[in-house]
Amino acid sequence: MNGKKPNLAFTSVVTAISASLCCITPLLAIISGTSGAASTFSWMEPLRPYLIATTLIVLAFAWYVELKPRKVMADDCGCEVKKPGFFRSTKFLGIITVFALVMLAFPYYSEVFYPDTELTELDSNAIISTVEFKIDGMTCQGCEEHINHAVSELAGISTLETSYSDSSTVISFNTRETSISDIEKAINSTGYSINHRTTQANQHGGQN
Image 1: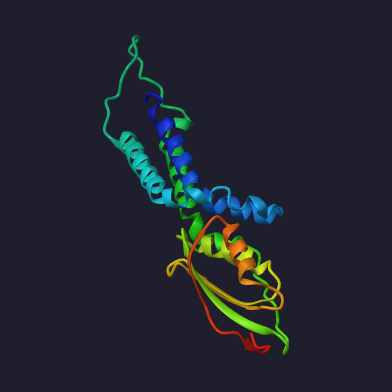
Image 2 (image 1 turned 45 degrees about the vertical axis):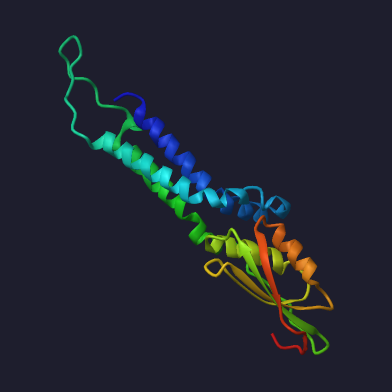
């Protein structure tokens, strides 16, 4: 076989990794303690569907090339041509396919690698406010955890519920310790965009 299959395999790996960079990068940044770089590839989030489609098309074509019937050729001396090496084998293409699919699915299981979210226990003097943000750009559970981690780093956060399917996060916090502006800055640091905000009336109490 010519060099087509290795090139197709390489292309599928690159596109699969690219499709997951929006979730891989913030996780690596958080684990390494460099959370300032967490939003580096968030701009790639809208491109994920196209990168996923490209990966699947390339893999499908690579398997078509591999499995289609082909004639057994002989060289000039009449000897049968040697079998292709490992990097042109079906086994190698199978490994590449599994790796690419695991990478494509990474955003949907990446939340298991995030540190546990630690929230503040409020005292009786706390003034609690609840705010809901509508957020553009979230497409998976990894996006939820990215936002949750950024907001939970603030003082006075009591409850935190983020949903990528609803494109929203609902946050209760102690206004004596944290402001809405602080929360907005934390969300913006992740690279996602706030498009709407709804604030409830303040209340006193120390219940989570």
